[in-house]
Length: 241
Image (tube, rainbow, N blue to C red; front, side, top):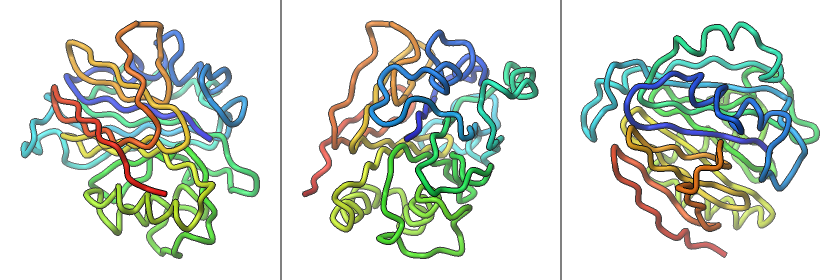
């Protein structure tokens, strides 16, 4: 399993989202509070963000040009270079993750989320049988998350709900929590693990688990789809077996 986090709103530092919260991804890499599978997330990490001075409105691509990524196969707590630079990385749209590799999966930077098709950043928190996923030359690694990301990118984010249902039919034990963003929009799913949303004055956080004890965090029920644009959150049920 993994833990991931997304941000859409006013530009903030990556450090303020990932490193500084009392129970942020840095702490979740060694002591997650709500993780259902696995004890820690020490098999890599990744941060993706979109350059720009303002959070993009729907249809405004000023903040959604090219996604930038920094990924590693090392534990997040052991990377002083990232810790020194993260306060200077500022964006209105961020997707970050820490990884717990499933048995038999490669531990390499390219296997760490977020994955990208050049427009979207995508993280998968879960597990899926690789044999039910089609092979792909576009997959960034051979692990299940990279193959699933390639399938979602090929099918399109607009078809995410249908894609998740189809994968779950092929693998009923699959856990399919997805988090994706393109600079002006975030889409997330709950399918087998936790997800919470926090509406702040300056933007919206979507995360596997709350990074602090703010009572405003809203837990999303299992098998739901979350769609976030600037200042707006929509939650709808996912239909499936």
